[in-house]
Length: 136
Image (cartoon, rainbow, N blue to C red; front, top):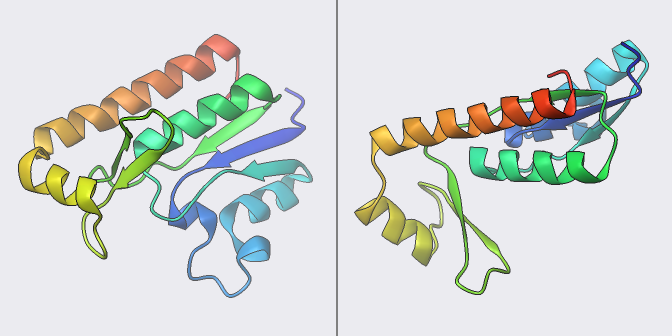
């Protein structure tokens, strides 16, 4: 397999949160530098597994990716599309929770659904990669 571009996606750990020199010292840079390959890092702080699935697929649909390294996050994080279909709301527990997060965690969230959602995202991404022939 000839690797040219490695795609990374995940949450703050993949983004390089808390590193002094985030761009230089984060996992994606260390791996790609070690292999002498280019990389793209789509990770963001607070990103959910729903968001990781969505942005990874969107990127792969528009770009050539030779290898994908995906680091899923906490199962409690979710995202929902707003009623206008224009913006994804992050549903996160803790910190400054917005209205949708408050409602979700007070009225909807449960562990069984969080676990099922994790496996749904994992299954969809694995099958997407297999269908596209992208090693992961």
